[in-house]
Amino acid sequence: MRVTVFGTGYVGLVTGACLADVGHHVLCMDINQDKIARLRDGKIPIHEPGLEDLVRRNAGSGHLTFTTSHADAVAYSDLQIVAVGTPPDETGAADLQYVLAVAEAIGANMQSPKIVVVKSTVPVGTCDKTAECVAAALGARGSTLGFDVVSNPEFLKEGAAVADFQRPDRIIVGTNSAHARNVMAELYEPFNRNHDRMLYMATRSSELTKYAANAMLATRISFINEIANLAERLGADIEQVRRGIGSDPRIGYHFIYPGVGYGGSCFPKDVQALTRTAREVGYHAGLIEAVEAVNARQKTQLFDRIAAHFGGVDALKDKTVALWGLAFKPNTDDMREAPSRVLMEALWKAGAKVRAFDPVAGEETRRLYGEEPGFELAPDKYSALDNADALAICTEWQQFRAPDFDEMALRLRNRLIFDGRNLYAPERLRDDGWTYFSIGRAPVQ
Ligand code: UGA
Image (cartoon, rainbow, N blue to C red; front, side, top):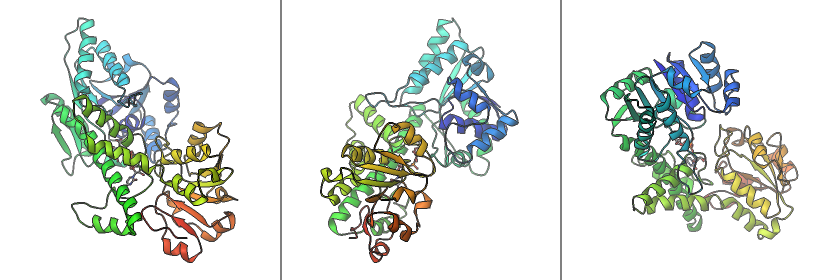
């Protein structure tokens, strides 16, 4: 099949490369000329395991091509997948300008009937708006060509996006058109051979499913973080409680790891957008609002503890905190809404310095905070510790899980760790004379 994908961000590029890899012919369109030029050279703009190989291989075989021309993109195929960004606007709502601009370009350029597939994460009702936009652009040309708009949300996790696309839990297709349904079945047939993963539903149900899935996962995280905060105050250990509740198959072990709050480009944005959508239809989504409030508070946990330990915010002036992990989660260089940012910004405000190490997100952090005098990037995890007053941990990269504690003690000024991801056994650190704060467990001091 021939397929066009608009947008070469995480979702667009992964979609395009994975569809090309099973034999479809895919043209990826992006308005960013520089990005397209780099993609043509096989350089991908994001850190995503396996993606660069996939792009190179399929660009090499001619299955994956790139363009900056709307007209070429629309002419290339009858299946037009929209995977452009929907960043939050200043009110927290998803900004639909990029999605609607693509809709307009499709209506303005199409010469044959099209299926427009909305893959970007968009508020309920956006497929209807997209259809209106395509129809208006067609009307302006006096054209009566037909088209369908299909909702097909994406459930990729950063760091595992290629595998998630190739082995999906479900493929959700929201449409009432039998023709669109058949075309979507053909598109995904290579990913749907052993088990039927296709779930067909009404467009609005499909749109809401995406937000409901992310809000549910975010709720689990805020829930366990709330219980962790309670556990600390009650003298319980959240890791024991986590195992205790996770063993119930109705609860399960996924997404109940306590920490410094969820970040990334999806949960924070989607939870906010859902509360906003609720308000727009006159409903107060109290639970979902609380999920966000608990998360915002959780992101300040490490700083509050560090300040309390040193005797208050003023005492942090001229202290140096070593920081392991900057990215919002391991295996990505994504710093969007990363809890590390809340910690670093609070430390700088208090006059402290941060010497950070992250296996891949260092450069991205430098790009964001290049001018910040309190920020220093260390070349490896141990040199981040040299003469620092404490170590804080924000991201659970594998290489932080079993460090050489003797080496750490030699480099740090104090045997002092503030662990936002519960990476270590408190007893072990106690025996070695460390002061160790973690989440939802009694401090070791
Ligand atoms: C998330 C969803 O997991 C995907 O299914 C969805 O497709 C994607 O958003 C999206 O909407 O595009 P992602 O943002 O890549 O994927 O990251 P996750 O692996 O879900 O992690 C999100 C955050 O939750 C991270 O900051 C992570 O550290 C945190 N988290 C996760 C916890 O604090 N505890 C947990 O138990 C699990």
